[in-house]
Image (cartoon, rainbow, N blue to C red; front, side, top):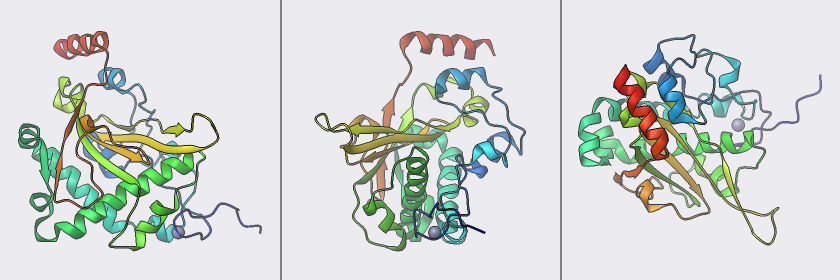
Length: 255
Ligand SMILES: [Zn+2]
């Protein structure tokens, strides 16, 4: 039987495994085991890019197979676990985090925060890579090489921000607001086939992780992080137009 020509973007083996677009634990935490519908009109207004979600095992929740099962399972398990722990911590300390507007990874993970925050970073880098491959672009070599290393240099910066518009929503509604933005490529003005950088983000509720590859992060979106700092300072974004914000406010007041 001829093998698929698609190769795992992390290790180059035969790609036989599909990554979830949205993390299953995020969906189950917010919605139970499904089936999911676009049941929140409010979240939909905020989202713009919200995808139709049909159930936590639905094929539409997955990318095409672009990883091998080893990279997508055993290898990435510690990254998934660290990410889950971070999101759980952020949501259960929500009031405090929103007041202080920073995250101290030693509070989230305890003494082993350095390993754990590196795993969080690898979780996000994997998510960014899968999203990039899904958009038909190769994952840059300096991102591919981080996964087996504990020290690395890469042009992928992450920042975290508070989406203030999501805070308008009731807690039950906003906790179900899980998604990702489109992937934006920054092109060379004189040679449009040359990509200089990529930008995208993903979020659970108001907690938004921004990806900046090859471009300077917007300081309003938070302090720049490459798993190299115990603290991250949260930025503040308000993606809605004033008209959209008024619409969300009046709908939120009506529920
Ligand atoms: Zn692999």
